[in-house]
Image (tube, rainbow, N blue to C red; front, side, top):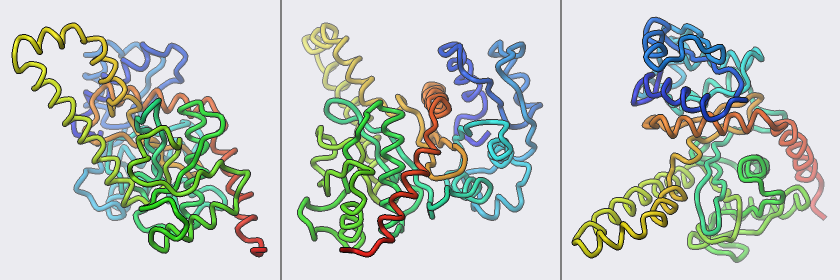
Length: 336
């Protein structure tokens, strides 16, 4: 109910997702039933056994302050959806709603994994030769070094699930690759990451110009830096696409060349399209939450639902928790 484009776009995405994946688990739409019923009928889903509705009378808006909204809007679609996961009646929540409220509600209702202090948002971003996982993409703007160590483990496992990379290379975002470069958060985190060798494949600090090269598979940073990186990339991708269209239609000769290269441009658009993966999971909780953009269209939401299906197939959270416990033991041990 909280997306910018309204519940109609969400229902359209569900129809696409169900048609694309016949093995997808049943989907529960949480929201105002009186509003949802006509939309579901419009898209021909009213008789689907793979779709149900849980009525929620309230909506947390983008303007609502997270903690205030959670106290005052206990019958909101967001709260009710997360409670389904807590009760074991759903495996993943997919939401386009208020990020702060989603993170606060997820943390308060589901709690963090044993050994994890703060959850983190992970996003899949294209790079040379494939994609990489960016973590944290905005959940925790002021972390401590141990939080970034936990993020490296969470991102490592998510990369295995979503990108199919058996042993991801993990890099720490900094302003230089030499030890000692960066602020105190980065230098301390770098030393801690060296101490958990064997749990992740740590490639060391990386600089901005290495992010989109085939250098690492997981980029670890604080939520402030990560959120700026993610939004800047998405804006740049749209800018380049628009600029290409403008330049290629500038005269008939270019337009002819563009027509001959249509296949290549379509492939490029698919690779850099932010809608390809559709959402960012909030990792580190005792339950699965996947955050899609508030402005997500049906194709982006469909991709988020697909990603949710991939999360369900794996035992990702239990493996994360085991590695977090091992890392905390190593970090608590005396430095030789």
